[in-house]
Image (cartoon, rainbow, N blue to C red; front, side):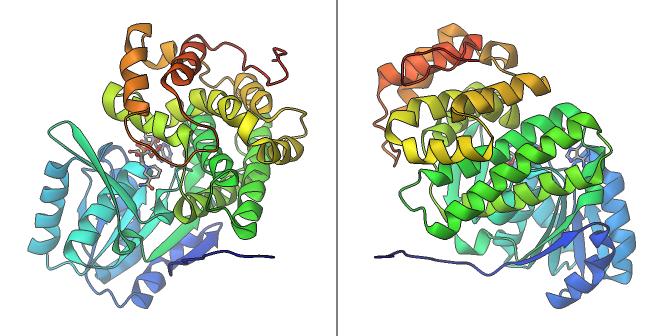
Length: 360
Ligand code: NAD
């Protein structure tokens, strides 16, 4: 018989092409009168555009978001919002900007609207990772979940190809691990499979034509669904490993997800055969880890950890960290297993099939 626990949090989502023009109306729905717009330094022009669209509702901008949400940056942004009498924030950008928005809004207890421009999915989760003195801490709190998300496909049209590929595979990873999560439900399964289908389709469309707006729409829709998976169920070995590699070895977020995903899938395959079969089916393949690895190769994405800043000498320490605490994962996570996984990922070796054959 069907049995599940669902803890849905409330979040308004607007999705479409050109939706940014509704940002003023969306802010009014949140009863916010004095908005501060957040962005990275490189996307200050986007923050300007949002502030213009907000007309008299925008009281300032903070274009200082950087990766890993350092506390010092958050403190500066919080002070600015306070000084300006801000009663809400809009984050426009990728996961780095969304992280800052979550940190600021949760500290001040003000509404937060996110306009995502990558496929990272952070806008759909109540989770925040912050760094202080080089150490990263992660917390989850319903108050961290942004109140509203405005997805505008137009804003993703400027994403360079390399970021498009790695960010989309980052999103795919949320959906893959949701399928074998011990908290999975029929609804998250459906979301995850639809996300993988949409991301795979969007990547192929963009490869043929980087200006294809339908392909961009598929990618952003896939990211929306995959972010929903990330916010709804716990993740496993893949996310733990990427968190470790990013936090302790400073590897770049989305490229790390892109390299590791096929190896984490191959590791988990013996204990997650049904999930792998379902992923393979939506990707028109007979082997899910190989399908993901082939896709990344075909698209020219990164396939080896040594190419993104990781060295063989780091493997034992990374394996120690990955097994230092327990977390739900379909297959038992052993130090030897993680060392073998990282050794293959270091060189971009073909993923192993559980039937012993080598593919790709
Ligand atoms: P990011 O925000 O740093 O953006 C990646 C790159 O894309 C940057 O160089 C940025 O300048 C560029 N970019 C963004 N939008 C663009 C656009 N429209 N056109 C051109 N270039 C654009 O990184 P990200 O990959 O989006 O997010 C990664 C961060 O988010 C990490 O810190 C990660 O930990 C965090 N994250 C958190 C969660 C969560 O639930 N807490 C989930 C996913 C990611």
